[in-house]
Image 1 (cartoon, helix red, strand yellow):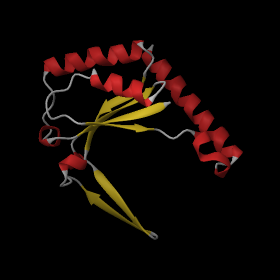
Image 2 (tube, helix red, strand yellow):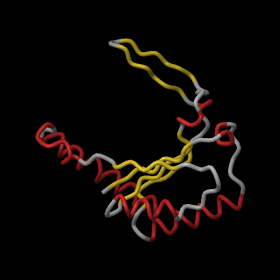
Image 3 (cartoon, helix red, strand yellow):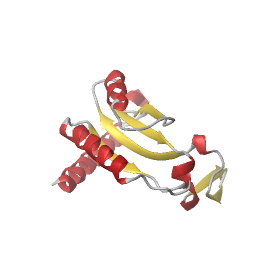
Length: 144
């Protein structure tokens, strides 16, 4: 099972205030634990929403809205993508993450091709497998 762990933004992350050396060191150690356990597939911090954009779809029209975005509590400051056996295992790993007071993380299971049943045609199912294999190979190569 794959889960995406979403790190919610706060006023500091939206102000572009970077974590200090202590926090970065603790997070680095935690990420190494995740890698050694074979859990971490990906993980990154995100720049403030002031550097981002949203695209709103309405029929054939596309509207670009430049950041920053008002509702900080609805924004994401970073993420992990983990491979674990269960939601409970993902929760146990999250509880060990080195965050301070007020931090909120959200855990969301990622859809797998088989979740879509017959609605996902075989050629797209194969395409999904190919794309995931390519991404895994790139990640493995990057780790070396």
